Structures are given as C-alpha cells and as structure tokens.
Image (tube, rainbow, N blue to C red; front, side):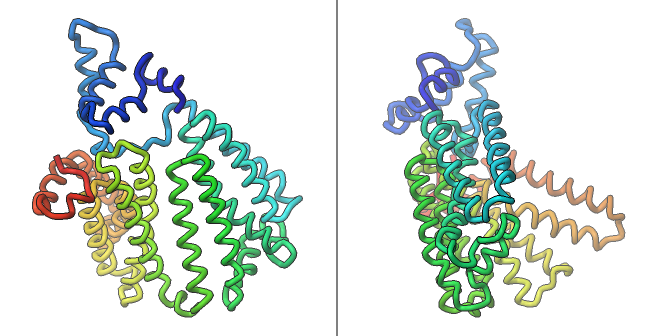
Amino acid sequence: MTSEQEMQTLGAGLSLERMDAAVAKGILSRSQADDLIAFWQAPAAIDGSDADEEALSFSKVSHVDAEEVRFVRGFHDVFIAIGIVVFLFGLFYGLKDALSGGQIAGVLTMAIWGLSEVFSRKLRLALPSFLLSLFFTPAAMVAVIGLIGGSGAALTGQAGDVMGSLSNFAGIGDESSIKLLLPVLLGIAAAYLHYYRFRVPVGVSGIVGGIVLLFAVIVYSIAPTFLQNNLSIFTLLAGVGCFAIAMYFDKRDLRRITVNTDKAFWLHLQAAPLIVHSLLNIAIKAGIKEQEISYSVVAIAIFLALSLVAILIDRRALLVSGLSYFGIAIGYLISQTALASDVSLAITLVILGAFILLLGTGWRPVRRAVMSPFAATPLMRFVPAAS
C-alpha cells in the first residue's frame, strides 16, 4: 500500500505501517493501536457521541482473533483483478491455435511479470498481487518445461494438448521422468525470483508447492512403483511439511501483525487438503469403503482432530478444506435413515452451518478451555496466547 493509499484508508496523518511499527517496537499495545485506528476512522465527534463508541466497539477483536487475510483492500483491487483475469484469459485464448502450450506459458509468464511490476511493485495492490503471484508459478513451470523440451516431443502440440504433452515429457510410466528434474528446479527458481522481487506472501506457497513436486519427481525417478503404491503417504508427508513451515512463520509472529502471518495462512490452507485427503485415502486402503458408515465415522473423527489442532494453533484456515468431507460424512449418515433425500440434504446443511456458526462465535472461550492444560508447556512458544 502506498503512502497516499494509507492516508485515504485511515485519514491524513495516520498510516497502518506506522501503527504496526509502533506496536512492534512496544510503543503501543495491539489493542491500543486498534482503538486509535477505530477512533481515527470514526466520524468526528468531540463530545463522546454514540458514533465514536460504535466505531471503537469494532476494535475489540484483535488481529489474532480476526485472523486477518490482507489480500483485498477495496473494490479498486477487485476491479483491477477482474481486468487481469480477463486480459490473461484473452491472451491465452488468442494464442492457443498459433503457439504450443509451452510457448503460450512463456508469453503468459512474461505478461504476468510485467503486470506484477505495475500492480505489485509500483501500486502495491493486494488482490491483483495475490492473483499474479498465484498464476506465475504454474505458468513459469510449464514454460520452462516447454523450453527444455522444445526440440523434442514436449509441449509441441497445441494448447489443448498441454496435459497430454506434459505426461509424455514427464515419462509417466517409464524411467524417463528424470528429465523433469531440471525444469522443476528452474520453475522453483523462477517462483523464488518472483517472490524475491515482489514479496507477495502467497508466493511462498508456490515455492513450497514446487519443492513438493520436486521431491515427487525425485522419488518417482528412483522408485516409480514405490511412489505409485504409497502416494497417499507421500502427500501426507507433504502436507505435514507444509504445516511445519506454516508453524515456523506463525512462531515468528505470534501477535499476527507482520507479513509472516499471511505466509503462514496460505501454507495452512495448502497443508490442510493434503493432510485430510491423504488420511482418508489411507483409510480406504486399510479396507474401509467409501459407501460405508465406518468411512463417515473416520472422516468425522479426522475433521474433529483437525478442529482441535486448528483451535490450538488459532488457525481457522486449517478447517476450510475439511468442511466438505465433514459435510459429506454427515450427509451420508443422515441418508441412511428413512428421510427423503431433500430433507437429508437440508438437515446436513443446517448441521454443517450450525457447527461453523457455533465454533466461530465461541472460538475464544473454546480456545481458552482447550489451551488451559497446555498453559505451562513449551507449546505456548509456538501459538498465540489464549487470552
């Protein structure tokens, strides 16, 4: 956010960056800073009117409790983001019959970098920066694969054949997958350069995702059968690794006021589906069938365990990917009754919605209760305080 934008957000003479710096240096507490920001934004009333009291009341939720996600700051961001998506899609659509998949990815990679120079580095718009960073890593990866294999069979077809060409180049099913090592390494390097240049928090997730892919390629190159037979274990370990990196960033910012908390948020969001889906697949391999009550019970148990972890580390993002499995499991259990399908669906949605509302509303007291046994343990060095 530029200085001009900060002044527009908080009013002349006060900026979010300066307030966060004051909190970081101990000049103000987080609650004092929040109260001051709310007071500054409130309608002018020096007589203690209700307008000021109402504005100040919204500051009672701390940065930690709110689990802020700073990737949109106004509809201006949304408007520019729509333009970026339309522009990139138009670029892809216009080139799909003229260039190969790798060449199109190369053009998109350069376009994304150019747009990032304007909207991420110069204007520092949050949502456009998020989208550009999200698009860059896969585009760069495909472009590098196309470049490395340009003289061979890789990515020489039209854009519609990209996935098939990628499979051929990767050598899926034979020993030639080693050819993917260099492109993946270069793709990770490109993702790192983009992150280093523009410092968009979600870029860390792209780098970590590239590293996961690199490990998959290495394992598959050494023992393809092992990876095929143990894919769920590999993705589970990948999810745990993403979670561990997220906790590293969380530990560096327990008060959730710096950019480290944004990096951790996206990594938690990346880790959760890998963990949940892997555990359910492992349960299926253990002999539990999807269309059985036991599968639903396992899915609910996994979700409840994930909920406990999410409460302990104070990260609602960890629950998002598990909600779909939780809802499907509840729906299946209800469908085994004599109720009509429409009624079962309605009850499932009501139960799922009620769970979210109750947990969200009572998050703080629930977290205090869950955290009380851990008050004097080393765990407190890694998670925000419950108060």
